[in-house]
Every structure is written in structure tokens, then in C-alpha cells.
Amino acid sequence: MINGAFLRVFLVMFSFPKGETAVIQTQQTVVAAVGEDALLSCQLTQPKDVLQVTWQKVFPRGEVNVATYSKYFGQRVNSGFQGKLNVKDAGLQSCSIVIREMTEQDEGCYLCLFNTYPDGALTGRTCLKLYELHEPTLHVRESNSAEESLVSCSATGRPAPTVTLTVSQPHLNFSHYNTVSVNNNNHTVTVTTTAVLSGFRDNSAQVGCAVRVLSVHKEVFVMIPGLKQTPADGFTLMVVLTCVCVAVVIFIIFIIFILFMHKRRNSLSQSDSEKNKTPQRPIRDAHEIKTPLIKQENEQMRQRTSTKKSPKSVCPKPSLTPRRLRWTTSTI
Image 1 (cartoon, rainbow, N blue to C red):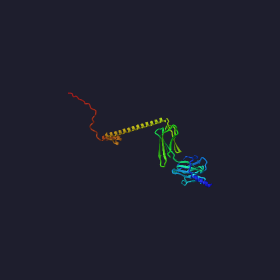
Image 2: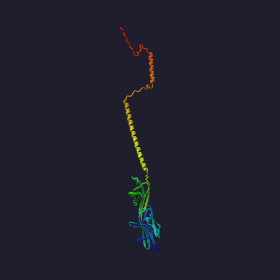
Image 3: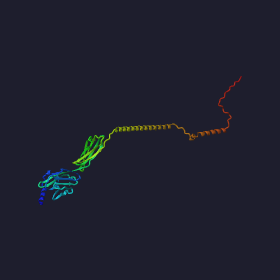
Image 4: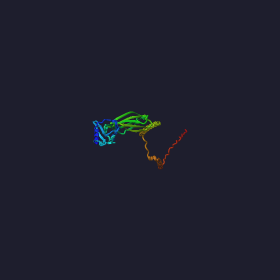
């Protein structure tokens, strides 16, 4: 009995797979991020007499067994894949494997073979896609127009991510799209999309950026505050005009001050030149200026003393009044 079971297992393991995938349920594509674990699973939709489940990886040169599970031998992982994957939920009707810490070498297609008796091998196929997607960066800058903003979103991933800009307000729209892609050394691609957001006025708006790689997507949002346009625009214009007028008045006052200082400097220089041409009067002695009365009294005292010492004159002083001349007549 046991020998017959081993014989059937041996025949099934080396039998050519019939490719009856209709009775096997599996995912056609499994997406996993770099460095994360990936789960591959297969399940029979009909009860079958399964002797062994075999997992294989598809290479350009052919398929290679990576793990097996049977009721008699349990689960086994081939030497080239030990530590990289292990069998999970081991069973003859459904079986899964887990690939640890995904790398580029793990990307590809895998086969799950249900070796049945007497139908042979029923094969399911699932492909593992590796992706890498970093968080997008969203920037909003002011444009030349007050009702426009320049929105830019950048994302890095593998394969090249798709970048989509969104806005919450229905009356706002994007225009003038520009997309640039840059290939990086680590096989990732950086995609940057820039667009002009027009129709922006008073209300605030939420701008979003959605990036997608395969079936994985991420989003980021930025709130743009509204531009408060009030009747204060006329007041602002008045303030600006007032400032301009004040500046002009200050400038005029400054010019007048400069001219006044220049004129005063010229007048001072002219007066100095006139002083140099006109001879100056001799300056009296400060003692004479301060004591004119004392000098006059001294002079009078000198005259008195001189009159006392000198003798009186014999001759009388001539009279100032003219005398009348008397004419005498002689009688003959």
C-alpha cells in the first residue's frame, strides 16, 4: 500500500502538466514593494486526490522547483531558496508561499502544480510585480496673475509613476500641463508634473496630487488660502497716492533747503570779500573808551593849575564887539 503511494507520487512529480488552470484559483498578478514580503497562494476549486503540491519559478531557460509539500514528506524548500521563502498554509487543496524582503531577483512568474491522481498535474500561474513608490511632494507657487497659481507635483517610483493633479473647487481648472521624467541610477524614475491653476479668487481651495505605480497609489493634499479681495482696494490706492504725495513734498522741501543753504553760503562769502576791501577804523583803546569822563576831568584840572601859575597879561583882551568909529569934524 505504501509502496503504491510512493509510486504514484513519483509518477506524478515527473508527469507532464496538463495545464488545467480552470480548477485552480489564484491571482494573476501580485504587486509587492521593494523590501516587503510577498504572498503567493493557489487553491483548488474542485476536490481532487492530491499527492503533492509543487511551487516553481519561471526562468528564461525553464522552470525550477523552489518548494514542495506532501502529506508524507511535509514542506520542503530547495537549497537555493532557503531563508528566502517558506511554505505557508500548507495543504493539498490550497497552498501558499511567502517570499521575504522582495528584491529585483524575486520578480517574475511562479507556477503552483497540484499533482493529482489520476489526472496528473493541475497548474496555476501567478506573476509577481515589484514596485517602488515614494511619497509625492506637492508645491504651490504664486503666478504673475493674482487669479493663477503654479502647482507642481513630483514622485519617484519603479516603474515610472503616473502623476495626476486634482482640485476640490469645481470652478477651478488646470492648464498648461508640463511633465518631465528623469531616470535614476537605482532603476527608479522621477516624474514631475507642473500646471497652472486658474480661476482662483476669494475662496480657499484644496489641491491634491495622486501618484500611481501599477495598482498602488498615494495621495497628498495642500490647502491654498483664499485671496481676500475687499473694497479696501480703493483705500489701498488712496494710501499709495498719499505716500507718493508726501514723498514729493519732502523732496521739494529738501530742494528748497539745499537752495537756501547755497544762497546763504554765497551771501556770507560776499560779505567777507567786502570786509577785506574796506579799511577798518582804528580801534580805540579800551581804557579810553571806558573812561572818557575821567580824562576830561583831568584835562580841566591841568588848565586850572596852569592859569594860576602864569601872570596876568598886561594887555587887555580885545573886545569882540566892534566899536563905533566917531568921526570928528573940525571947523575951519
